[in-house]
Length: 207
Ligand SMILES: [Zn+2]
Image (cartoon, protein in one colour):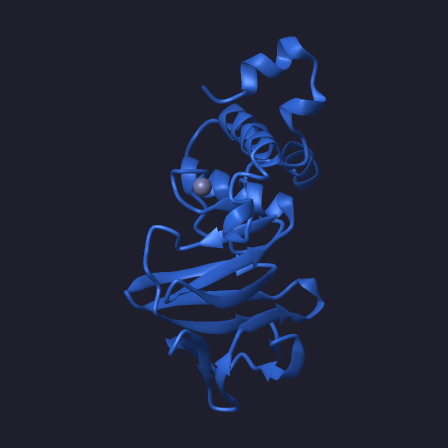
């Protein structure tokens, strides 16, 4: 999935940190090095371009900066500096560019991690097991059906109530509700109403 982040805010500056290992940094498609876990990358808008600064790097006038955690297990932590937004943690890669004077952040994330993130953002932590299962199926179904909703914006779904609230992935990329076996949760995050019989699908599609 490609999810547009912070879409209800006009982001001018963010701080990106790498968790569980370094992340590769690409500037306009060219690999420039790694963002270590001990460093932080401040990214802001200058004259319609992306500028990035960390202890190890400094880039001005980039069209696009991409951060890719190593090995698929790493996470990226993003904090809004201007405007202020509390830290959120994402799995997958994040690309930053400038659109209409604001930062556009796009999170390329495995659909299972996106679904788990939406379920956590929308359902919280203490609902009944059946509720999470239906939420997971419903979220995945919505994501698949609405993949073209933001195609002109450069991503597939936004992270606000307009699509589905998505405030990052749970702490572990394959996170699950604590009471559910991993294999079972994995099945629910991989299932959409599109693959079910019509009579079952009607029960799980959100109103
Ligand atoms: Zn949307």
